[in-house]
Image 1 (cartoon, rainbow, N blue to C red):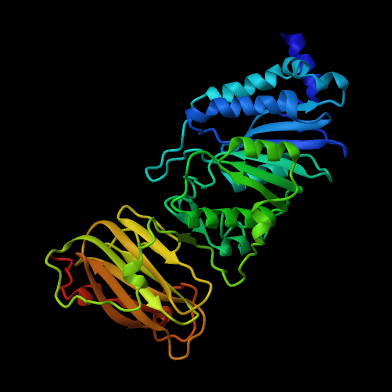
Image 2 (cartoon, rainbow, N blue to C red):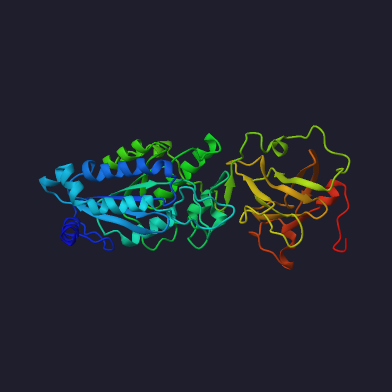
Length: 436
């Protein structure tokens, strides 16, 4: 056994914990695998990767397999430029240790992080994995081929506000931000990645809609470009991804859209695609056919609060179900009671955003505010508040006195950039006092 291990080390040119040596003529292949794949797909993943190792990948190449969530090495091998390694049988014998490591990794039941709001199905920490590769891959002028096997929806219990679940996806502001401002920030990377082509395969159907799939695909395309790479195949078909990875395709299908970062989207925020096309109809409609004239008959129930405005400025909605509870806004997207939604549009005229408390709240305790975040508006911004409660729509105007945005700052000197939404007055009910 020791002789076999020594032979494998000589063939690989590197131990599992060492960095592979590089030559200019070598081709380099890297595979990042989620430790949380569904058991139903693990056999297919195992067979596909073994087939790559023993038959498909070229001579004089390096292959590195990593856990793309925990940032750990699974195995690394080097395929020599020797005729003997044209034989799948020879490779199977020589790379048996690496194949065993892969099998053990996929067979293991990896403990998932504990978070009541996140599932971590197929989760990968893509941006941290890219940092890991930038630090650990050898310097080379040749491009790398990178294959990711796992969910395209980012999840991390340490940064839950950036999680791409339930229809959320990052705005282009993340791509123009620093790492301190956003986990997706690429503007201040100390060490860029080597040139690479990324193929990505996921399993099942993680998309709420075709629009959601397009938004996430667009974001990852631009993110990969920001790190010096190119997104190739991006699909739920394992065979397509593996073939593209093996061939190191230089033509990226996703970039055929010629997507570019929107320079007007400067704020790093998480946007949301609704589960249904009509999820925001109550606020999208230009006019309300029947505005509620009477107070609701009950005080407890789900509630939606939305704001609309027409100027090319950035306003932000803040709301909490009661004093002391979590406040929902663009940097805190989910709470036990509900979620924040922002509809981003490339042109002004029908901007809107809303917060939905999908758990029952006491209408007498709900608090909401609007902040003039960015832009200029002589005389101050004005718009419309709409509240949906007990299947009725209530409406009222709002205004802010400041003529310039303050980027969300608070305090006595910033009061003119904020306005309180009088929820109870709009609903025509009395506010509950602290003594009640």
